[in-house]
Amino acid sequence: MSDALVDIIMIVDDNPTDRFVHKKLLEIHNIAGKIMEFESGKTALQYLKTTENPDEMPDIILLDIMMPEMDGFDFMVHFNNLLDRFPKVADVYMLSSTDDEKDIQRVRNNPLVKKMLRKPFAPDAFKKAIKTQT
Image (cartoon, rainbow, N blue to C red; front, side):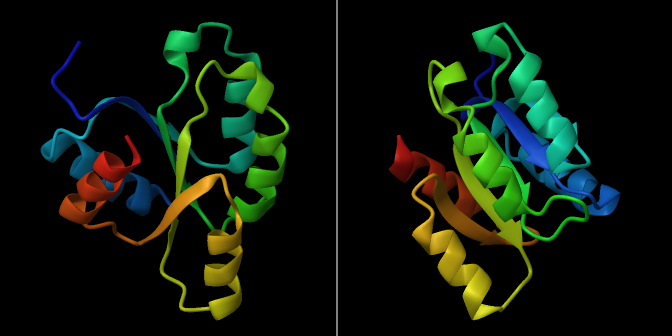
């Protein structure tokens, strides 16, 4: 077991540069012991549906809002239907660079989303958000 803030974080983002930046921020600031990366909501959901070992489930999901095929809000609908699979439900933090008030309100209205973080997230603010959730 590492001395990271959380055990497993799942990054779901179609942009490889954003995934790389967020992974490096998580590593440098010792936020996650293990980081999983998925380039789409569909592949992340497939992982969540098929993983049998509860120790391989993420503690936190960093979820991009704007993705092709399935955006972050669509992902959340499907994620909500999987909740009975999890011994502990992962905290979801949505990532975006949007200033669209509709998107911001949709994030606020979703009880499964802990907070919306601006891309790239600020590590200290993210750590603080995590600590207030635990």
